[in-house]
Image (cartoon, rainbow over all chains, first blue to last red; front, side):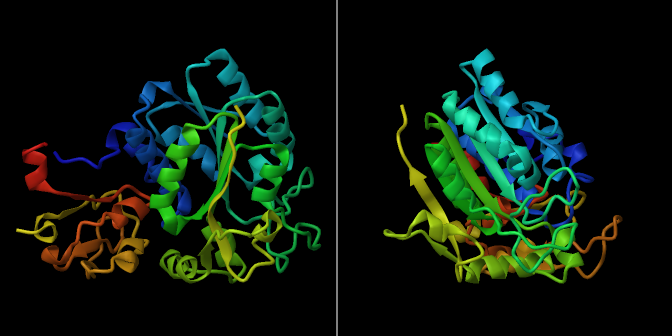
Length: 255
Length: 80
């Protein structure tokens, strides 16, 4: 029987109930698995750490060495994993809740510890509406649980400020470029961050947002532009730009 | 015979959730939505014109459910 190219790295019986139809997390996981296949790194050397929420299910869907870290310790867990097994490639798959509620502190600590990690951040453009933590990464038209508005994070700028060695941003549409970014980031020392803008389908449907998954592909096509020379990292804010700036945003050898 | 004629599109009907991203993204308009639903109630894509496929593989890259991929049978049989 003919198989999908990444079927060997999948637990396909778990895919049916993992994500909504058209959710970008599946595309990101597909690009990640294709990158693992093409990079030549043995799949036994890959360690995938996932956090909470929908992105957490990626750890169960892939046939790699994975673990699920609870809230507030994903990057610490990943850095410890790297220290325990220096020959491995550790990838942390995170959403807004994982990276921005408490993960920003962990990102800072991981950079200062000199950990070699790849952070794939799926920017699902939602607040974490709990009273324990808010993620201000939502366009200002959408309130948090207390009906207030907050200024969204500029994630690439934040990562560069913390000292990440490689930062890239893509959308669900740009899966091919995303794959090559992941291959490139896997070869970098220090902490690399690949941000993927992929708003949550359910949250957007509730708020009358982008709508169907195939409609948002058109929006990604028309509302994105590639990084140009001279663009300041402060201009990478999704909120303030007419179009989302994508591409390899920052690349610096920290070794 | 050119690459376009050799590209072959495979669809796993059981995995598809009917998001229609592959139909939207295909520039050659190879895929259309099936008029009949599969047992899960999903209108899966079907190949309208296999010879129109350019083999770009973007449907394979974008599919979130790993339900579609493109292969080149002749090149698979005679590896370089």
